[in-house]
Amino acid sequence: MERFESVIHHPLITLKDGSVTLGSLVAAAVVLAAAALVARALSEAARRLFHTRGLTEGAQFAVAKIVRYTVLLVGVGIAVSSAGFDLTAVLAASTVLLVGIGFGLQNIAQNFISGLIVLVEQPIRRGDFIKVGDAYGVVDDIGLRATRVITRDQVTIIVPNSELIGSQVINHSKPTLNLRITVRVGVAYGSDVELVKRTLLEVAAKSEHVLKDPPAEVRFEDFGDSSLAFALLAWIADPGLDRRIASELRFAVDGAFRAAKLEIPFPQRDVHLYPAP
Image 1 (tube, rainbow, N blue to C red):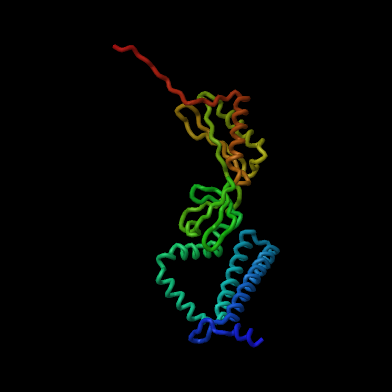
Image 2: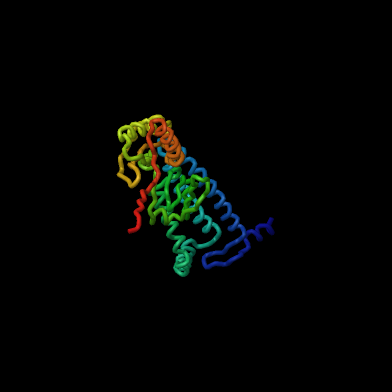
């Protein structure tokens, strides 16, 4: 037993205010493991608590993340102290180290701070349908360095948090999930424009995906070179299905125009030939 205690308490590293032993390292590991378990338990408890109070899923996720990171940060501090290190000295050394390699950590620090801003201010939340860059997708996870977005093609893209703060991001989930889609169509000159309007509105009314409120509308957009340009504007409840629903409406418009004898023209030019003088 005495031999075991001597091994456990034998100094591995001698410091100014103490020493690091095998026992202190084991204690630090236990503290870290306990902190991880407590962080997970508290984050889940916070999520359940705010769920019962009616908070949105995105808000629950943000609160749970902040609670988890806070508990882990406290646990790391306690573990460092338990290992025998002077926490003040460690922080001072870390500051000097970060200043020395600051240029190399600028992007990491920027993404870290941006992640905190996203979690606190919640410009986007988990489950939101967003457009970032040229990609559309659902926010799957918001980390402290990057955010994971699953696109409509079921491809996961990793977006640095700094892009969510410093670049333009379109959030289709705020203030509502409703999205207005536009289906454009041209008809031949001489067509009955009122019939065109009625036909397009009937197509929208028959679609199970188009919302009744706000109602669909038809706009006479322009007198084109080869056709009269119209647009059917309709509201849908799921922005992730905009392409599919727009395609279904185009199929329906083509069939309805055929039934109503409305011609969809193709570009054409009249060429006049004159005999050479």
